[in-house]
Image (cartoon, rainbow, N blue to C red; front, side, top):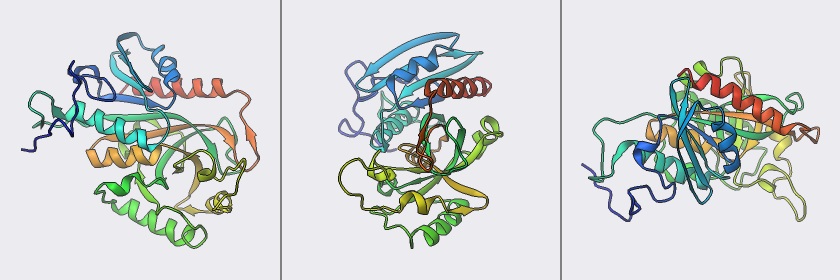
Length: 292
């Protein structure tokens, strides 16, 4: 049985895990992730009751109940570097016995549900659209550090993506692909617009956005916008989805990523009502998660 030494699994003196400052009993099976720490309260305000509120660094966690379903909402901050921390520590809280520092005999599969904001790369996906990511394609590099094997569906989608895009885009980092939970797609998002989300290691040049300086991949948005496979397009840019999907699949969890489209990169528009569309997404997702 594998033992996790103090240098690898860091447990605080109060029995909580190092970065998140959470104890195993404080985490529900259903977990909503948001980037912005201030958005945690915008989700938990709908709970019928809140049992705990924990904060350390950018990681804010509220756990409570809605319609009898226990839910944790946690902020990840921005980027897949933070996703690496959050997903590993959530998995450890669920599946490692902190007293013995060994993996539990019975493993728990968590439901990881991202509620985030994003920018569209398709002219016909306007601002204020609600979209779910069927696939996340990462150009951030995180999953290359894990032994991740694509399933047949992911493999074929990625082959077509690289055959088309690899010849048009000089990716500085080799992309990777990971998919949403088919079970959560059916239960939570049967009526949502579905697409392929590009997860980027930054907000500016990695998403084809430049203020000052020069960009090394000038044709990124135009080229990605042309990709279509099995009636799925590359639809939007953000900074966490592929990492969440990849690590959830590595650890045996179920994941899904919901996106409120606040910007359209083709028409150069930004939502005039961003708070309202995010609120609509939160309400829609919570109502469905509370029935899991």
